[in-house]
Length: 84
Ligand SMILES: [Zn+2]
Image (cartoon, rainbow, N blue to C red):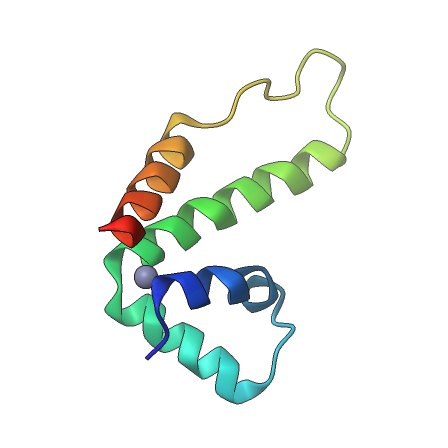
């Protein structure tokens, strides 16, 4: 099984679907087994969605000007889980 660090390295490609099937499977398996990474990827996807909707061109002053607190918490929890 992948470690969290390895999963982290693959994560962007995993979200893009830009990797061989066996690697995708390894990542998928890691997400199923690791609550930290599952939570992290969930938050990451939300932010990507937010980022994409920002490109749709909201009026000036309507752009989100702060990183969601949940994402910061997830990122910190994820990093802590890896350094334990
Ligand atoms: Zn993990």
